[in-house]
Every structure is written in structure tokens, then in C-alpha cells.
Length: 456
Image (cartoon, rainbow, N blue to C red; front, side, top):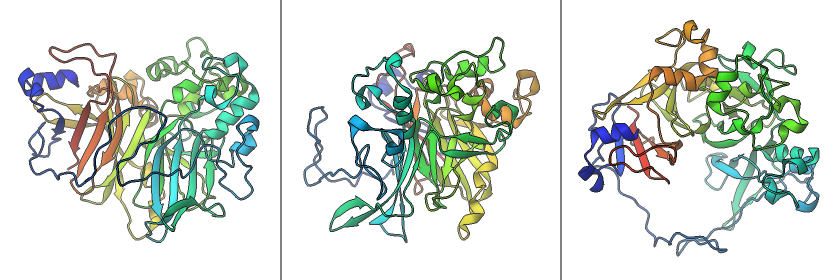
């Protein structure tokens, strides 16, 4: 991306701030790589606080912050009170999870003060969770420690209500639910049942236990929650059998560079024993918060990457478009367009809407425009000669497919948000400490670039 920007702008333009916010026109006719003069101005009206770190939670003058839910807070009337010295997997499954990321709100009966909160629990810090365990103390981790971690992953659905100006969870709610690394989840879409997803525990390749490292996400117009698996690669240890076909695939995703001890006690996280298990993670999971008995589904049509966000917006023809960032240095921005339009009058009709559609990857050009390149088996380089025997192969190896299509490598495309009013989609590029200076450009080392894409 830096090379394209460098080709587009002179050093003077950059110094003058011309690319503080860049707008890419994807065959839309809008002026490219320039801030729109008619962009709405901020309506925020408060005195900004200074950035910094100390022991105080600072908020702007005239505002207040309160704790709604914390790690270990009970979610059910029978849940045990939190005791970090005596935490168990059973206790954790009935309590709020660890390290919250995406937070979504789905109103009940249209209310802004009564609804369902959906929250991702991305990962765990064992050095903070367990007394006497350091950051790299894999050998000290017991089966009990690991199972507590797995019970803290996933997500929470919590009914919340505002009373007398204060928000609180409703512990007696029939909607409250914990999803963990052990929750039964269905695999759906083009990759479901493929040989590369089959394991000894699931010879059909259609059901997986749990979701892990769920980072950002989204909420659909039909009231479901999209939870995105991101750095799944860090949960697998061991080595593939010599010459295994997944060797190149797993190298592209960094699988095997483990940060967790799951594979010591659970064979499915040991590549030597279950070489296909890693292909069952890295997906977008759709969950129905209003049906606590429903089975979540990993929607393989949206591709397998380190997903950061699933920002949706309705196209003019009623189809649903989801924008996705692959949060890795030098990886890509994607969008998925459903084959069918959203049914706004029949919620159940959208149940499998995300199983059919087209996944695209973004290519940006030096003239300020770009193109969405479809990831479709049989088109261009996505053929058997390159190892893609079906659409399932394309989706399982989404990154390699995008490589071959010539997508534009980005500086960690992280958070993605869609504006339904302006039709713009915003992507935050976090950093790229691996990138070398390009002409006058310096290596980015922080959240420096906001990229806006016209969705038209």
C-alpha cells in the first residue's frame, strides 16, 4: 500500500496532510484519494482529555463511566461468585469471559435501554489469571489451567437493562449464554464436509468444537452476531507429518507458532495428531443471540483469514455486503456479497444467507482507483494447476488465493466499520513494523492510516 501511495503523491502533498484520510474510488466515479469537501463534521462537543496511562480511569468532563461486566462476573442465578484463587472450568463457563473485544447491542422490542449485549472474549493472559504462572511458563500449566482458559474464550450473550440511569445485567434472562472453545458449532457453506476439514472426532467435517481468538465482529440486519476468529494460529503445537499437504497452507497462516499450551492436553490442538484441525478455525461465526438453543455456524463462504471485523451494509439491490480485514502485516482487505437480498419481513428467511455469495479481495491502483477481485474457483489462477480443486480449497487457503490474484498488501487492516448513510467503509491500518521505507515514507509504528472505501 505504501508503494501505491508513494506513486500517487509527492512528498510535499503528504507533508501538507493530503492523505490524512484517503478515499479510494472502486469504479464509483468519485474523486480518488481525496477527502470529500461535503464530509459531515463531528457533532461531538466535549473537552478532550490528554492521552496517558496511570491508575485512574479518566473520562471527559460531564461524562461518567461505570463497570457493567468484568471477567468472572456471574451470568446466571446459579453461577458461582468469582474467586480467582479457586477458578475452575465449570465456574468459568457460567461467568463472563476474559479479554473482551467486539461489543454489539441488539435491542429488545426496539428499546435503547433494554437489549442483548454480545461480546467477544479474544484470548487469555495466564500470567495474570493464575498465581505463580509467568508469561512463558508452559511447563507449569496444568490441565486445569488450560481448561479454565478454554472456558474463558469465545463470547457472551447477556441481557442488559437500564434502570434509574444505571445499566445492569439481567441474570434471570433466558437469553444469557456463554460460548467457549468447547461449544458445538456447525460448519456451513462451500467448505463444509471437505476432506481438509475432517478429523478423527468429526469424520464428516461438518461440526467443530468451539471458537477461539474471537476479535472484532458485526451485527446483521436480521439480528444475528458475527464473531470473527483472528489469531487462531497461536493455539496449535507440534509438527505436521513429513510432506503433509497442509505444510504450505499452515506456513502462510503461521500455524504452529504457539503461544498457548492447549496441545499439551488436547490432541486436537496437536498438529502431529490432528493435522486438519487448524483448518477448522479462522472463520466468521454467525450466532443467533435471540435463540439460546441455536447452534452457531462457521460461515466458510466468507473465507478463512485472521478476521478482524465484519462490517455489513445493504447494497442498493438489497444484497448484504460484509467488509473484512485480515489483521496481519502485508495482508488484505476483503468483501463478501450475498447471492440473495436480505428479507426484511421474514427473519428466518435469512438463516443461510451467508452461505451463498462471492468473496472479493481489494486491489488498489496508483491512479487512485482499484478493483474488487473475485475469489472464484476456476477463474484466473484459482485452478487445479495451482492446487485449487474446488471452491472449498479457495476458501480454506484464502490468503494464497489472494496472493495469486495480485491483491494489494496492506499494513495490518484491522478495524472495519461501514457507514450506512454515506455508503463509505472505513478501515484502520494499525502498523507495519516489517515494512521498509519506500522513498520518502517511514515505517509505520502505530495507528496512522484511516482508509475510506466507497461501497457503491
